[in-house]
Structures are given as structure tokens and as C-alpha cells.
Image 1 (cartoon, helix red, strand yellow):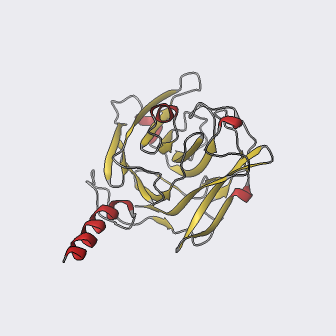
Image 2: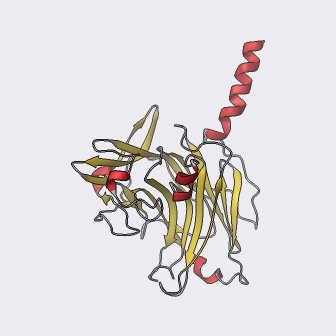
Image 3: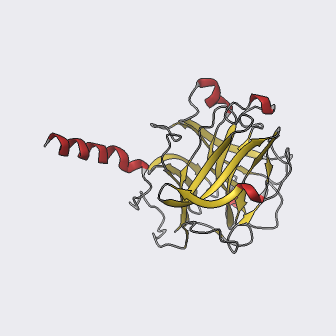
Length: 275
């Protein structure tokens, strides 16, 4: 009986981190829990995703070059997953980034992804986010950052494994760019070697971010918020693993202790679903 009780307690502890549950959250405004899109990453679907190729320093003072070789689909245990690999090789840093621009976009839906993150401190910057799939320039197009980790305050406070950022960016021009963000610690490590669930519930009035089915933060995008117009177009999805830059406040590759010369780090995406 003691062994049975122990197994039961272990089950309770592990379930929230397994990404296996499709339990409904406190769903609002009449959005239906009907699957619109799903990718289990059994293979890399070029009809949905594009691998980006970019030089170091392209945005945010980031240190990595993005190339196609650092985006793969492979095994993580018994799972077949999308793998974004950051690598420090011969004095250069490389990594992977994908997006669905012009291929798969949506609005006013629920999107969630099951992700296993690397240890970010000091210098890795994984993200799951969205941009307006329109012809408008940034930030007029609208940007929704569902999950970002590795921010400088988490490094300073020694809480990188629990300190998470979510944000929205908008404005009529770069000069008038506005950012609304929320950063805080969740109750458990998100870099513990297991998969965690990151969810955005997007309606005409609000953007709600959930971590492992626990509400993290809600942005008001109603008509009286002053930002409604920037989040009413369809958005595409991005996954990337950046290295260094303004977010972790590390722009010297020799100070990236999470990725020394000769090392690799991985961000694994088990699946993404849109409802």
C-alpha cells in the first residue's frame, strides 16, 4: 500500500509538466475548443514553416547567426521533435529560428506549444512568439511574445529557471513604439529537463498567457486600451533560440557561460496546436 501511495503522489506531481493533458482552461468569449491546426513535428513541414538565415547582430545585438543546419527534426527519447540547436564552434555562434509567415496564420484563437528548454543562464534566449502576418512594418504589424526566458533580471537574481517574460509590442512607427510586458517567477523550474506547456488565449478583447495551465498574465487589447487596432490581424508563429543580445544584456560571446566554445544547447518543441 505504501508503494501505491508513493506512485499516486508521483503521478500528481508530474502531470502538470507532461504536456499530455488537454484539459480546458477558463475559456472565455465563446471561443470553441476545436482544433484548427496541429503539428507533431514528425517531419519538417516546409508548407508550414520556413527556416530563417540571418547574420549575427541582425536584431537586438544578438550574437548568433541563424542557418538551416541548426534546425532539425529528430528524437528526444521516445519523442520526435523540432530541435533548434545553438552551437559555439570555431569562435562563431550559430542557432535556429523558424516562422510560419505567409503559410500558417490566424487570429482570435488559442495556441499552445509543448517545449523543453535548455538551461539559459548565462546568455541563452529561447522564445515562442507571434507577429502580424500583414504588410505593415514593425511595430505597426503587432508582436505578441508568449514566452521568453533568459532575461537579465533573472540572471542577476539567480532565478533564470523560473523567471519568464511575456510582452506585446505595437505602435504606428519605430519612434512611437510601445511595449507592454510582464515578467515574474513561476512556481517551478521551466528548465528542469522536462516539457512544459505554453498557451496564448487570444480574443478581440484580451491576450491571456498560461504556463502549465496556470494563468500568468492578461493584456487588455479592448477598444478602450489604446492598442486594439494592432492586434486584430492574423499572426504567424515563430520559435527561436537566440544567444546573447539586449535581453540577457550580454554582447560579448566570451561571457556566454551557457554556451562555451565547442558546446551545443537545444530547444525542443514536441508539438504546437491552434484551436
